[in-house]
Image 1 (tube, rainbow, N blue to C red):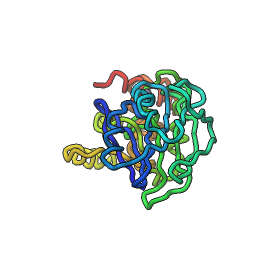
Image 2 (image 1 turned 90 degrees about the vertical axis):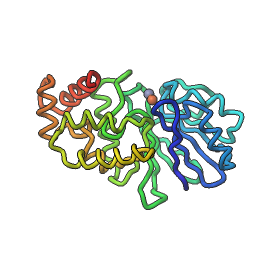
Image 3 (image 1 turned 30 degrees about the vertical axis):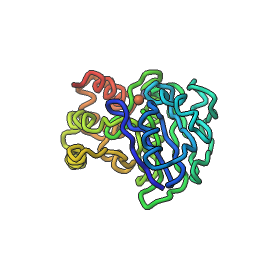
Image 4 (image 1 turned 180 degrees about the vertical axis):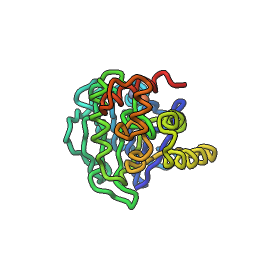
Length: 258
Ligand code: ZN
Ligand code: FE
């Protein structure tokens, strides 16, 4: 199975999984890069997975329908361009012979879902398509959810096996790492990772996928109980040392961080 990140817009990736004959794409905000990739490799489009309703994730769905030979899957608790198969937490689907389970991860939007490969097909670990919930070194903005909801969603993802491959939708890694450095200047793993990401960026390569094990080490939003993170959050107005208070202060700080 091949995993490719198709660049779209300024900083989106449309993830494509293919087996050489058939492909599935995740969050096709734009149809053009998907069509180009299908044509270049002579692939049929066997399905579309959608994590949430934002236009940069669903904008290409209707344009791709004429080529689509399988279902569109999407979140049951929000509206995306229909028809589609509405998935609730715990649902299990099969795409290209791989089994994915569905996780509710509200916060960025109220009905946001993630897709987790149930058994790893390769040496690199199970795939997680998490949309705009968990980013490398960051997390999505809270458009429709509360900090407590987003914190719970991120904890769910952080509890997945360390080798889980984090396939998120945006290339925000380097700017997220600038914020992470302000939150946790003493985190050595974060500094090392920033160097590796910079090298990849300069080589014109995606910084993604990341892994859950790495995110636990470097992502401030998954480290709300690390002493340096707590201290920085308190300095930015966190009401207490409690993880939700720390998370809330971090998210608000990030919103105004330049
Ligand atoms: Zn979004
Ligand atoms: Fe997005």
